[in-house]
Amino acid sequence: FNVAVDLSFLTKSKKYTYFQPKFIYYATYLSEKIGYARYVTIYRNFEKQPDKRFHPIFKWFENWCLDEFRHGEAFAVLMRSNPQFLEGVNKLWIRFFLLAVFCTMYVRDHARKPFFDFMGINVDEYDRSVITLTNLISRQVFPDTIDTESEAFWGLMHKMWLNTDAMRKAEAQGGGVFTKIKVTALKVANGLTFLRLFLHTPHRQPLPADVRMQPVW
Image (cartoon, rainbow, N blue to C red; front, side):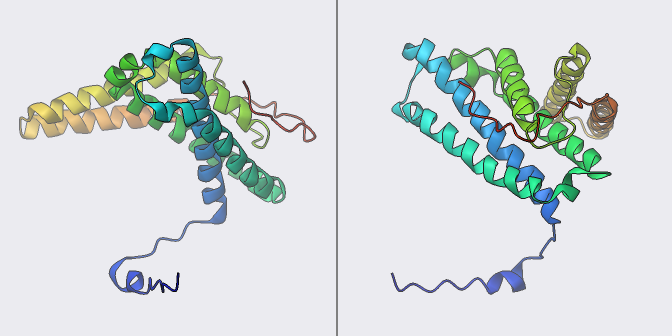
């Protein structure tokens, strides 16, 4: 279209942050795979409850979820072709990224429970299903994944949500110094909860190298 794009102003107005490629691989891979799991779960729900499909955009979720799955496969290939990103201390980074993605989703979804209720979805069941499926898919490339069969894992995830909810309510009420102390204490509690999740024994049975995970319907 004969349109020139000049982004040189970014170097003057925005500070650059360098991320190691492996961190981009982990984060993007998980973003695409959990996106697949979320879309396909919502799509299935509306197949069972078509009266809850309040907008035609949800009819596209089948195609979108498959796109997300394919995008993730590209990053799976990148990591498999660079096995050093899946070994040694990188196993700890992988566990960190898995938990960061799962905890963020769990807390945000529970904060939007009325929206899920409107779609006829039980948010607890939804998050369990999506996280378990994403974790299973991740076994195609990650040597360590999360033990989602452990009820202790889910208990800590819910504790993180309760802490976050209490934090939100305290901030909404205000209260000066006392509120700041309470919010800080809750943030510390969430940090310790995340540490406990991180220290849980991971799942260490990756899928065989010759197995290519297909979309799960």
